[in-house]
Amino acid sequence: MGKTKAKKRGKHRLQPMGEKCENQSEESMENGGNFSGKTLPLLQKLASPAAEEKECACAGLANLVFEPGAVPVLIRQDVVRRLGPLLIDDNRSIQEAAAGALRNLSLSGGADVCAKMVEQDVMTPLTTFIQQSLESLQSVSNSPGSDYKKQTISLVVQAINLLWNVCESSETAVEIFNMKGLLPHLVQCLKTDIYPMSLAMPAAQCLHTVTEDNPSAAQALCGSSHLMKTIEKALVTEPSTSEVMLLKVLSAGILYNVRYAIPMCSFSELVQAVVKVLSQVLEIDCLEMLGKMLPELEKAEEVQMLLNAQQLGLEILSNVCCADESGDDDWEDVSDMRSDTSDEAADSDEDHYLADDIMQNANNLSAEMVNAIVTQQVPKKVLDKAIFGDVRVYEALDQHPEGKKAVKSLSVVQIRALICLNNITASMDVELMGGADALGQLWNTLFSLTYGNECHKFLTNEEDFVEAATGVMRSVLEKLSALNAPQCITAEHVTVLCQTAVNTPCDAVKVKLLSILGYIGKMAATRDDTVDVLQSLGVVLRDIITSQTSLWIICEALDAIFDTFADGPRVNSVLCSIGLLTTLQQLVPVLKIRIKSERRTLGDHYPVVDAARTNLSRFLKYKAKGH
Image 1 (cartoon, rainbow, N blue to C red):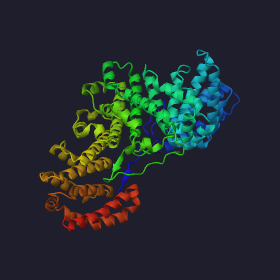
Image 2: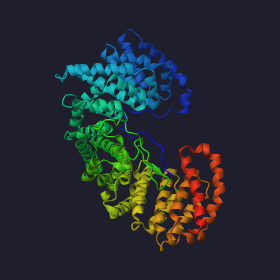
Image 3: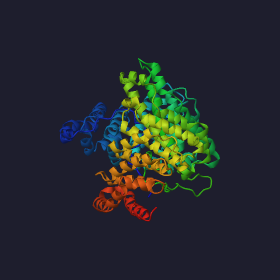
Image 4: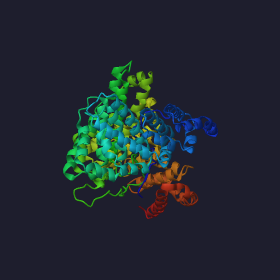
């Protein structure tokens, strides 16, 4: 029956520095024409022969783009084609003002506007400016205190942030990045003994974005020992500050992105180094650091950067252990069978290159990667990031503006940790996870974390948290079900899970809970002392399939029924006692009609729904034979 993938919420990458404006309201969009009176004079000044007028116009546009409704007007007026050439103006002040305006435009407008900026040819002047500026920086690298160098660095930082924004949103921008050969220039910026961290950081963030799913960039990087040594040096630098730690994690992410192009002779050593860095960043207790700062929180920005590093590190680890390369988020389980599809490796003709699926296939993690994850105790450290700390610290932070921001970041880290732990659990052998007893302890920890924890009130998005936590619980039960080891499941667990499956308004959580109930039912069915459990599960599943819920949910509940009541010493008596068999027979024509009428709206769920319909008929025939 396969699997269907949950919709992505977008990459969990660190956001470019700066503030995005709020979503434009309908009212402001309707009044967008009013901006013409503001924008036209500024656009006209961009063509003025007077440098002061150009600079003033750029500054005005840099502020205007954050006003709701302004960006669509400016895009229609070809603002990018007018601002772009000013990036390579002879006047440094004009260059800086133009770079700031374009960067703000990319920040305020989001992905769609970034794509429009590429269409309006922002990349031609931008790439030219970055190449020329970095080349000039190399020529003055021996004079670190010069005003010229400081101004150039400030300009390049603006330009690289703009490049990062557009490359994150546009495949065309990435193609131009490759064609213009910008990668070596950005890698040079990571030499923190020559360039300041203010330049190294955006360069690393941009590289982390553009090297993802980019074979051309991977070959360019791995084909140059000089460039690889620069990345490796950044990777192994001692983490003296939070900035350095974030740079190390970004370097680890870059190397992970190009893993399939790393020569075999270097692969094992780099894997160990990458996982060591990711393990290092997870060892840091940011909540404890914040607690020690209270009540002032004077250095909260440093902790915020460490939280960003942890978030990114968890994302990288999630991808390392994810069965499908195309996704950051976990998968919606719709059968007992794993999907055996995966992205093809980029280029596997040469023996000394690793195939991409060695790193990505969850059932075929490289021995080096598995060894590194186990040796560095990564699963335990990831779980530690998912667990709440002292509630008193959360309460104190919640009274402070900077503290509220930190609590929000802690919440994001927790969710990323749970998604990461889900992928680790799904991809690692039971023995490597500590065996059935360790999985049982993990189940109990997750249950306490998910249901009834007093710190839930500090979560930024409780629904996302519960979805992620339920995903890990499902993966743990999948492993325990294969071992038929239900000892950790209590009657209280079953009651709470059944109630939540009925009451949760979130379909993604409901699907995972139904899968969990199916695993519990499958284990309970093998015993003759679990009638009460089977009845509780059967009633809940019966009520769901007869409700007016979505076909997707109904079919997930059917899968759980098939798992629970296929075979077992007491399953048939329970089926009859709660009227579930009759309900299933009555559902056949109803399901057929609904599938026919709703087929066009099912989207990716159609194969799952169609398979459930087929399996329902098979299940009823199987039971009719007395099984």
